[in-house]
Length: 204
Image (cartoon, rainbow, N blue to C red):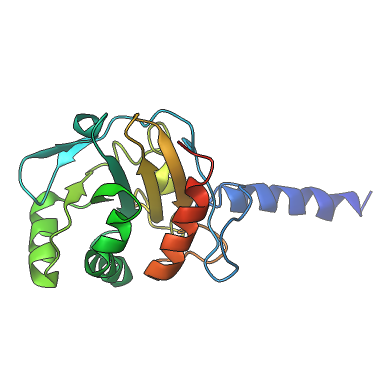
């Protein structure tokens, strides 16, 4: 009977741990150095709506690209995560390499207010559009589910998730790098491109 108690407690701890920091319980993919989960909605699923104010002015509406271009979405932690902005600078520098894969716009999403993001992109020299999802309306588990893969105790913030949406409006590839066990907040572009190429295989 005494042996059963630690087993029950251990099981409850494991369930609790899965609920924190967004491990999601998914198998790891990618390299051992930069593993990622694949959250839901995932490859093959219709892309949920995404319409938010942009640092490029006006509102970015994902639906407007359907039938025209593939879009790479980058959900990230936001103003408190300097590696996330370094990631954007790297993406900007290697933009031609993503274009070679047939990717059109690259757009980042944070849960910070638009005025603060506008100042940040100005300070960092970032021209890639960054969207303000204040309140995690679109990042929530009921829509894109990206704030499940975050650093522990970060509240509504996203982790470090990339999602490729095809011209047909369906998700072609998804990589949630920001969850357990490594809580990755920066992925080198060569690794990101390799994971992207691998994930796009078999997806139309």
